[in-house]
Length: 395
Ligand code: FAD
Image (cartoon, rainbow, N blue to C red; front, side, top):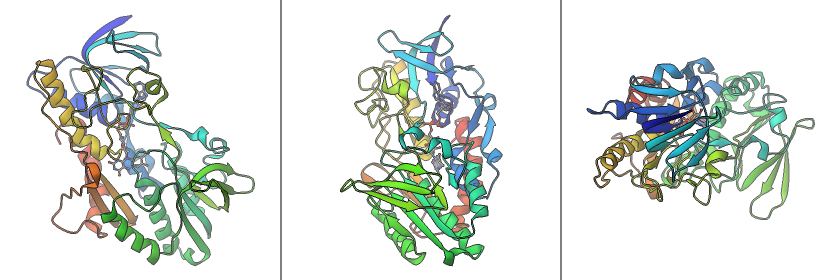
C-alpha cells in the first residue's frame, strides 16, 4: 500500500503532536499524516515526581487518540526506513508513505544493553530507573522500603533527555531519607560521567552549595559500565584514567546511556553522530530542504527537553509554512531549554538557558534559589499547560 500526505510527521510524542496541532490551527492547514506506533502518550517530566512518590504513574498517561488533532490522520505503525530522494518512508507494517514535507520527531533511544548486567535486574535487587513508564514505580517502591544504606544515582556518558532528571530523583530521595529518619545511616552518592553537578555555572553554584549542605558524595567522570545484582555492586569506569571503581549499593537509580534511534542512525538523514541533521536555527534538514526535525532525535545542540520542544515547534511550523509558499525561512530557534531542578519535596530551582549557556529566565526574581512556587508550577501548573495548551498548539 502507498499513501501520500502533504505533511507527514514521524512520532506522535511531545514534538510530533505539538507541531501537528499548530499546523492544524493555521488558517489554511495542510493535510497531515502522523505515524506513531503507541496507543499511549506520556508526559515524561512527571516521572521524576512519580519516582518520588508524589503522583501515581497513571497521572502521566493519556490515550494517543485524544491528542491527534482533528483533521490529521493517525497511522498506527512505526517507520523503519527513509528514502528522502524519493520523498518516501517505509513502515514495519510493510506500507510506503510519500510526502511533500517530512517532520522527523521519534525521540531518543534508551540503550539499557550498554551497561552489562543491567537489563535483567531492572526493577529488582534495588535497581530502578525513572526513565521508562514500566519501571518508574520501582523507584518509589525501593525508596519507600529503604531503611538506610548506600543509594547511588548515575548519569551516563552520552547525551540524555532532561539532563537534570538524574539528580532530581537524588534530591527527592535524600529529602525522603531525612523525613523518615534514616539519613544518618545512609550514603547518598551522585556518580556521574559529567565533570560537575550541572553544565551551567549560574545554577551549578547553588547546586554545589546544596551538595555540601546535604552531604552528598560525588564521583564525577564516573561512567556506569556494569551492575552485579547478586553482590549488589555497581562498576564504574573512570573517564580520565580508565580505572575501574566498584561501589556497593542498596538502592541504584540508573539513567541509561542514550542515543539517536537505530532507524535514524542508519538513515540518510543522520549526521555523523546519528541525529537528524538540521540547521540549529531553522530546524530544516541541511541536505533535504523538505525535511524538518525537532525534539530529542534532532541534531539541535540544545539541552533535550520538552520545554525546548515548546520553543522549537512554532519555529518549525512557521518555516514549514514559508517553505510550502516558496519563501525564505525567517523563524529562528535560539536554543531555549528549561530544566525544573527539583531539589527536594516542595523545592525547585528553575534553570532556563539558551545556546552557549545564555541565561533566559522568565521570572523577575532569582531563579537560582530554591522556591516552593516553582515546585508548585512543575507539579500542578506545567502538566495542565502540557495537556491543554502545548499539545493543542495553543502555547
Ligand atoms: P518523545 O516525546 O519521547 O516522543 C517520541 C515519539 O516517537 C514516541 O511517541 C514514540 O512512540 C515515537 N516513535 C518512536 N519510534 C518511532 C518510529 N519508528 N516510528 C514512528 N514513531 C516512533 N522535559 C522537560 O521539559 N522538563 C522536565 O522536567 C523533564 N523531565 C524529564 C524526566 C524524565 C524522567 C524523562 C524521561 C524525560 C524528561 N523530560 C523533561 C524530557 C522530555 O520528556 C523529552 O525531551 C520530550 O518528550 C521530547 O519530545 P520528543 O517528541 O522528541 O520525544
